[in-house]
Figure 1 (cartoon, rainbow, N blue to C red):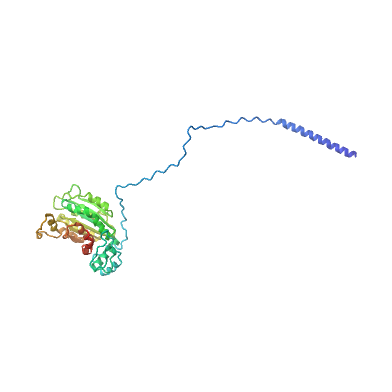
Figure 2 (cartoon, helix red, strand yellow):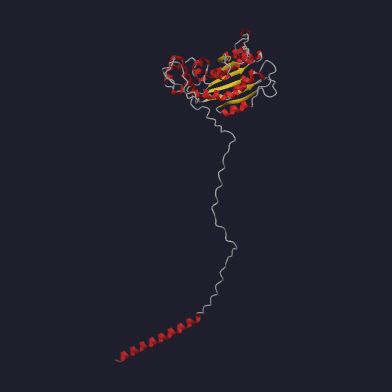
Amino acid sequence: MRYTSRRLMVWVMLLVFSALLHAVVSWRVGKQIEPLESLPPPEEAVQIVIDKPPEALLEKPKPPEEQLEFEEELEFEPPEILIAPKAVAPPPPDVTVAMKAQSGGFQGIEIPDGMAAVPLSAGSGIGGFKSGIGNGLGDGTARFAAYIAGLRASGLDVVFAIDATGSMGWVIDEVKDRIEDISQIVRSLVPIARFGFVAYRDKDDPEFVTRIQPLTFSNAKLFRFLANLEAKGGGDWFEAVDVGLSDSIEKTGWRLGARKLIILIGDAPMKEDQLDKVVRIVQRFRRNGGTVSTLDVSDQANPHLLEAKVGRKVARAMYRSAPMHSFLVIGEAGQGDTATLDGELKLTKRLIKLIMGDQFANEMQALLDVL
């Protein structure tokens, strides 16, 4: 019993001591902790004052696209060769009988409005070019169809080498007026035909000896060239035919594989000592696949022109009624046609016949009758 009382007293004393010790430690720790300084007053909020509120941001509109304005028609030059040529040379004018089979598959010839009902020949059995050319046609038309089919595949380049001296005014005026008809009819047969011009005068002409419009598909370029061309000069009899032909061969831009045709149009020859040189130039052009035809438009070769001018008959026996000698020689060297106007008062028809070939004059007549 005594032992138990002593143990209880010890525990009470330890409890009291522990409480005192805890109180002392807590006091000392409390004294080491400094009181918190008072927080500074909050800074005043900064206010931004704007006199005028900014305008609402709007999406800046895109400037309108600049409109392209053209003072004249657009000119697009198609590629040099629209259809791959089947041969480097066009079919010969005298197409063989075997080529008639080719004409049976020919799709027809598109021609301008107003010409669609032109009959080809009596008994042909079709209403016009637009409906096509078939096997039922005569031999001449079958050859013509085969020939045109060959030109459509290879192309056609035509350069007019034209005398531009004073006596040629009526010729240049008609070409100016009718170049669209010429190009339209030829392209109704051969859509990839191109045309060019070389105008020539005397070698001592103060304005020019030759003026050139290279081969082009553009009628606008042809119009501009002809509009600026006047028939002037030519004080002596001889003209620079040799220079005109040389520039026609070398400076007009022929296509490879196309039929290349120069039509020399004039009423006066070159000097006789230049003829041999010209023949060599023309023969070289011929070996490269070209052809040169000549058209003598002088009164001596065409007395009917003089009759139309004076309004009465003339003694035709006094006129040669044939191309001049130099034009005959040049045409023979170029293996082309040597021609006069052949009784025509209109140059246009004669030129179209020469372009397509005089051997096809009968086949072309139906088209030309509407001019």
